[in-house]
Length: 139
Image 1 (cartoon, rainbow, N blue to C red):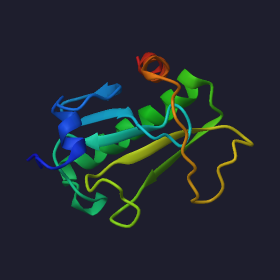
Image 2: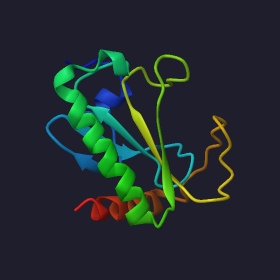
Image 3: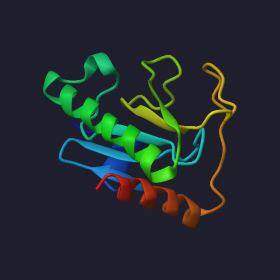
């Protein structure tokens, strides 16, 4: 099921451009347009699901497995020391379509608690380079 007013559904459908780093029958992962740190990835189910409790049981294992792969890929592909993985349900959920944030982390990067400063890519080419590095680390 697709929500025609949902930007993530539009990304999944290919109607809105995004730097995709993972695609499967059930999920799509792409770079966040307003990353906490460069290489910040969002994983979404192709099906329009609003919150984690709404995720069908048949998709749970695949969702977690894809999250694990992305958490490894941001470390291996970007040289990060670790990752921050988070899901918001309703509160602080800027797009009402289930998405998990996978954010590359390094010691001393300045991220404190739940305050998420945002950064920008210099241009689409830099963003595409980060996406390619993560995609390459997933193979």
